[in-house]
Every structure is written in structure tokens, then in C-alpha cells.
Image (tube, rainbow, N blue to C red; front, side):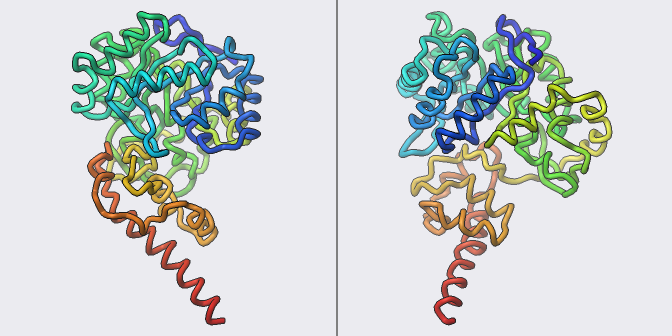
Length: 380
């Protein structure tokens, strides 16, 4: 595994890293297999945004005895409430989060402590208030609990401020082919290079949409870091070419690959042994200049839901509707029809997605279909 310096931090990171979002509910066996494969192939950076105790316990068990070989991240203000993800600005909850992280991962330090998911100027102003979460993050760095301070966000016009103001050492930001022509992103990455801020590139595959080749898909700000648009993804685009593009961008130290299984990890690790022809992404750049309206990208930053609907999963099942997905929908503990239409998700969504029509479509696609299936069976 080739490594790069993570900005001015002095930390060396492998070019390919692992994002654990898709492992939140993975089995212990699957988690162990992915961690073993990653470390065996030289991966040393794991993004551990999940605050859930059972997730942390599984991942800690998979890492046992190898803490000195890996860099671990904690997202300071990513919390959970009633079993759901919840972004908070409460410093007391953030302190509890850090203490829980240290205890469950059996460590006395965090490599990168991220101020999590700062999107929009209200988020940014709340982060900077006296006694707020940025001040808390810097306290942990002074105390040696955090080796460096980072920020994660999706909007270039917001993220550029902490970079230029010297508040962070690391920026986690969407970098992928879909935002190639977005000038705000280019200026942001250049600012990171000039100020010694290491970039951890998330959404290397555009939330998975860049791998949906030879079909027209929509990209939104959460995936691009810039305006939304619609594009037919070329058949020649592969995980290797996606990663190759990301790793050519200014200040990018590592590309985080979100993986759900060993096969997906192997597809990303193929970059390490790929030749120049397999890495060539030049034919994929054309056409990524036009921007149009987008839609939900399943991030679940709209949670918590008062009735505990997994809104991101509901939206994904709507967008990828097929009869074979009925069982997956039926397995959800809370169905879309439980929605009280309170609108909390719409207000909380950082990308202005109108969630309620998605909920309605889910009910029509999956619950009406399920009822019809039962009725037909009963009749027959």
C-alpha cells in the first residue's frame, strides 16, 4: 500500500481507506472478514462514523491487538437517540460520545476527531460559538486525546472557511468525477493544499451512483459537493477508475471506499495493482459539466424520525424498486405508512429534499403491492 502524508498532521495514510457506514448492522463474522482483508492489504485508515454501541463493539473486537497499525476516526457530534442516528451540538453528549469511543475501542487516543456534518452557515455558526463543539474538539487535541482535528461536510462554500481560518487539520469532503467541473470544489481543494489541510475524500463512487454504469442517474450536493445534475454514467467507469480520478486531485491523501462486503473491498483494492490503462478515466470526464435538480441520496441526516422510520432505506427502496425488494421492505420494523407527516425530516434535511412524496411512493409501491398479494392469495 502506497501512503501519503495527511496534510500537516504527520500521519501517513494508505491511498485506499475503509468507510464503515455500510457495516453498521453487519454480523461479527462479516466485520471481522473485512477488517482482516483490509489490514492484510495495507489499509490503515478506518472512518468510524457510527456511534452505536453494538457497532463499536464489533469493530473493536475485529481490530483487537492491532490498534498500533490503524488510524481511527471519531465523529464528535454524531450521536444516537432511540436507536437512530442524530446530529447534536450538545457538548455534554459529545463528551459522552468520546468517552464511549475510547472505552469501547480500548484506546486512550483518537487519530482524527471530526466535527461532523457541517452543512450550511447556521451549522457553521453553531459550531463556533463559545463553549461549542469546535472549541471542544480543540480541547481534546490539547489534552492529547485527539491527534488532530477534522471537519466533515458536503458544501464547498461552507467548508472553505475553517480551512482558510486554520481551524482544522483534516477535511472530509466529497471528491469524485461527478463534481469535476464544479469551481467551488476546485477552489476548496486548492485552499487545502495551500494551508496544509489533508483531504479525506468521501463519496469516491458518488454514493454508489457512479458505479450504476450505462444508465442515467441523478447526483445531488451530498454526493458532489457542488450543484446537482443528471448524467448518463459511461459503461467504462469502474471502481479503479473512480479511485484513480479521486487520487489525482489536489490535497487528497486518501479515498474512503464504503464497503458492505469483501467483494466490494476487493474491487477497491484492485486499484493498488492496476495498470495505467485500467486507471485511465479520461473518457469519463466529458459531460460532467451540466447541473440540474437532484433528490434524496439516502444519507439519513434527516433522522431521528419520531416514529423511527428508516427514511434513507425507504428512499433507496423507492429509487431501486423491484418486486424482489418486497421482502426487504417487509422486514423493516417500521413501515412508511407509520409516517405522521410531522415534517421534521424535511426541515432537518441539509439538501432540501421533499421527503413526504417519497414516503407516499413507498406506501404505494410496497404496501399496496403487499396487500394486493395477500388478497390474491386469500382469494385463490
